[in-house]
Image (cartoon, rainbow, N blue to C red):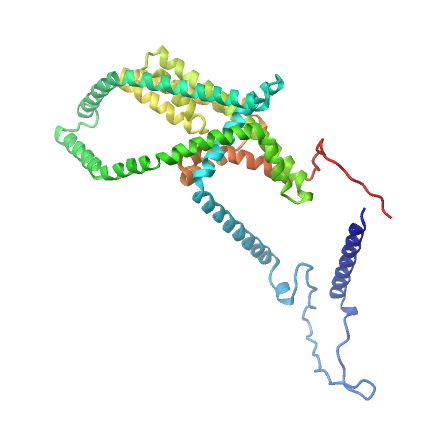
Length: 432
């Protein structure tokens, strides 16, 4: 131990000793100075006011160590605890609000970085395989990134081509389905007349006409943000490449910015959080693939149009837990209703519900495991908050963010000491 550390330890012990002595004097009234009495030649000075003793009054209680004055001691303990919690929660709320405002201001940078982190967690195992096969790091990263882009572009091309080929037939069957619905409204239990149907149709057209300007402005704003979308896409590609290639170096640089006493703890929590994110993304992709294949098989068996695009929609929707695959399955049911009638639509609905039950009770517990287990209520609240704050992107990012924060908080709150990093250098010195 250096001389500076010894001097600091002595000053610390002296400070603690002084505090303990002050607390002892406050707690023991016998050590307090006696009150002034009546003045005399041997003890000159002003005479103190006579003190009165109230019979039956409780003695004044000693102040708690957490109080600094008699006023604090007179406040109930529960109220002091509630006040302490309140102002701390207010500070945390203000900081969280400020962070949200900052994130909202620079969302064009934050959202691509979040997407790049998710893609890096998905592609990191493939990069690791190539590195173990003696590929250079840059080449391994480029091969994985280009291969992933090729797979995405190829899938989108197939989906768009099939959609373009099937639109005319689906439009024709949609018109027939609308006429069937009109006939059912007339002859079914509602017994609507032609005049009532015409009124409802007119009201719908008026609503569309009144909101045309809103739809047009939304389209114009979307066109105006095309440059932002392209910028975000390029940022996602560049960030994903460097996260995959230099992610370990970037993390070690960030950890070195922290105080020495907190580095190992934060490093341990960060690496555990990254492992949780990788496990979550891999498990989500596997679950989404199984959902898409399960629903797609039923769509092919019953010859539902757009089977491949609908299966791809189910795959993408499964990245939003609990609600995503269900909503995309509803789209498949509606297409089956328009194309093949209510009986086939009910069968597809049963298939969607069955796949969702298998996912919720078998795939999620088995594949996700305890490492990323999150209560369904936390998932629903996180998705709702993400939609309100950042739309579809917030819904995609909210659940992995909750999983990462859950792991990080648990590691930081643990009392265990993290393992010493293998590259750590311990310098010892002998006391003089």
